[in-house]
Length: 577
Image (cartoon, rainbow, N blue to C red; front, side, top):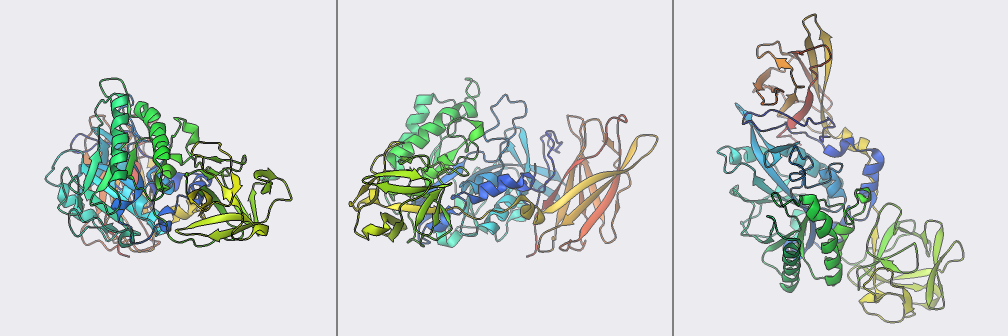
């Protein structure tokens, strides 16, 4: 599903014999069920950078990331190309805490219309670079406290048009570092995409690898060798201390093409291993840099646990924090311990790894009560329990750097409070007058959600329908582009992928709406499925908010059973705010 809400084709012709499709303008997640988007946007990681001080350099942060972030399609590679969950989009990754993305591009286009198609090797990922940028743009507009670090790399070498295409995509949304190794502070880049480029270097942005310290033991490593690489790099990042001059990037990913281990085969073992090592090594303020995973949402190798964000939380918790904003009546929170990084668990009286799934480990403050579902947290003697009524009234005392001591209201500021010094899941929470880190608790709020229909309204949409069919099976197709954004669109084009066997006459009639002159070019394809780009001619007026542009073309189907209705998407390179 592309970010403009259209359905992608698994095979699309491209001039160079690869596969491509034109960019979308909104967010690929527009096609998610509203409940999914609401759940993703309500969990506590959606705004996690908002809790980090402005003066924190990105190199002194711990940042969840993904490797080959958009490779959700496998083609015929038997599992060696796909690196992410096919059912979860780039927007989902961002909503669940990912702030480092890895985008691999291949040049695609014709004439004066050139774009970047997203590939993993030869396999087109049914997205263009504009799709990825559109998802990032939408996420940052909904969550301006955040930033996204984006690594861009060519998938077909130093193509002569590679840098030229970057210049057509570049916009104010991107933060361009003042020097190739000039790591910015978070305050400088909130609401922005931080550019990292290399292989080849685009001539600007942070330089890969000069600005980074990278672990990428990816090619057919043994599982033990890869685990050793991961752990050594975690320790190296932690031991580097504060004020790091480079951004550490630790790839949890690997590919064993040739030895039988797929990216999923590695992730199934390495993601839980890494999360456990992060929990073991956790210490307040000890940053680990970027942790770039395949299959980001699968801490236990279970596709049904897609809403879990345990991997990301294991990274995020070691970041520095702003002073506490307060605990507010009626708000829901994930409550976790500064000393051990474990969450107060509503299913018992202990702490567990952070799993803020919808409804899980979710505490609501009601007056001075802590409520999980229909039950309240109560203290009896030195033990805690959950009861349906008669729970303890609690007081929340700010300590430092965003934490609180939680004490019974009757005991006062210096009385015994919730305490947990165990580092394993299920350890009990007791009452203690100790005032070390194990007596301090963070309250991470569950955020309001953004529904799918709200996302969809902010996109530029392209749709197609058949108007008529003659006796020779020539189909007249109407394509309509609608601008649902707040500003005029100064450049757009439509990429149409036709079903297998459908032919398109290069001289067929292409009739456009008044004021829109359409140019077109047809790409052959080895698969027999041609694709065509329709674009307004130079000088065509911008597409204003709420306006539509339409055109028709004629395609010939091999039989009545095949309709030449295309899969279409819209490419936006430049918009005027």
